[in-house]
Amino acid sequence: MEILKEGKVKFYSHKPEPTKKMPVFYNPEMGKQRDITVSALSVFQNKANRKIKVCDPLAGSGVRGIRILKEIKGIENIVFNDVNSESVKLIKKNLRLNKIIKKTEIKKQDARILLFENKSSFDYIDIDPFGSPIKYLEASAFAIRHKGLFAATATDTGALAGSFPKTCLRRYGIGVCKTDFYKELGVRVLITSIQQAFARYAVGFTPLMCHEAHYFRVIGTVEKNKAAADKIVGNIGYISYCRRCLFRKIGILQECENCRNKTELIGPSWLGQIQDNNFAEKVSEEGEKRGFKIKFQEEADVPTYYDISEACSRHKLGSVKIEKVIEKLTAKGFQASRSSLCPTGVKTDAGIRELVKILK
Image (cartoon, rainbow, N blue to C red):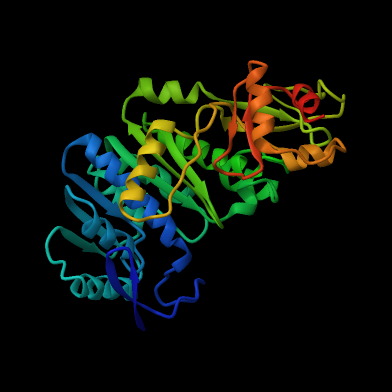
């Protein structure tokens, strides 16, 4: 056991070797993720202009909740929960280390039971498991408040991003395949699984921002009414994709319109925005104020990016500068921007034919 530092807090942790074998799980590589969480929750709290109640159902060492208490104003209280007895002991020890007594509740329950016992009780719920968050989503829909903020992380990236399509179909009920936009695919599968689980309780989930590393993570707002849920569900559909030429189109096609190859079907998938540019900009600004290295790229609101390196390779073209591609696309009247998820990704409503002409 050693004392570590992250953000404005100190905490006890077992030697950081992030595996399931750790007595209490802690991953130092998730520090940046928690920086983003603190910044996003601060932006949300400032806009909500009310005290907020937080639930960390899978608290581990408690570092996330302790940082929220120490680094964000306007927190009414935080419920720390973990089914592991060692975690509960360590959370109490870390709260004492940071001289935090008030505004906390500590529980030792299955996270799903805790959430189902607290209907519409929390303004912010953060699901950050080792693996998939899928089994906690319905309980989260039950426990989140109207106009609340919800975050979920998934570390089963291979399943989400198309490397293990059978696992994704079994676990998430969504068809995937290998694509050049695999990072955005993983994020969209995660978003869709949240939306479908929430919709069963007449809850709508709208993503505000997402990011990735060895995981996919999504943060978004919640509306608890049928109209909001119906609107979200109405924007879930299918993408037809050609692995040979990188053609993609919303809808169900048997054949690629560009090269006549057989297409693969992705979905059902969320087809709307994965980032609110205004919110992401405020999170970047908040992070900068706090000394965090957070920067989100403004994105065009179109489904999927093209990986320009992959497109050039697939069509036997020389390498090109991303900014030059974006400049030429916008000059021709297309939407175009970089992708926050992929450094060589370009988000555009241009088709593959138009893109290849520009790349030439």
